[in-house]
Length: 261
Image (cartoon, rainbow, N blue to C red; front, side):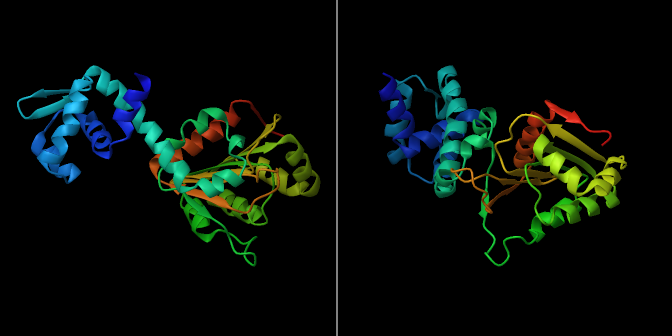
């Protein structure tokens, strides 16, 4: 029965699209045909199968989801979104430490649409991502989680601090000690800024870095072997901002605010 139901839901593109289309409520057949760009003759056999499985009901020429149909549709949407994300970026995901992302956020990958995997050229590998920098400069708040210091990070932090942008910076304990040792006066300056908050996360952070701006995020993952990767995952939309901010807050809840050094 389970295999049969999976076949019904996923082996026909028309059936899948009908289920997802009717999530928003019952629709007349004419609208369904228009949205699916198909004919009544081609679609009716698929509708009949869905009706037989009690996933669909019909009143005159109007079709809607049964309670079971609605339940399955709600589960199908994130699964299809996850499949789409994994399929589109399979090469990157296979070669990087995807399990470095905390499990609750792996389960929410379907929320992120239009991911961009960007790799700077070898010559420009340590240069500033100008597009992301501009987005950061226009943001009211920028949230960082970092296990290393990119060569451009001091410049970004300095400009954000001077602009009055709210900055939250979460560092690993080992990394924080290194920064304080090498940049003591600079760290004292940032701690004196009301708009800059620096936190220490004493557990292991398995991602390389995360930067969340008002419009989305930039994420760096390690390679499978734990080595640094220069590739960046970029995503800019409201869902991406929420996902990135929630990931920052996941670390923040167990981080300690630093007030003096």
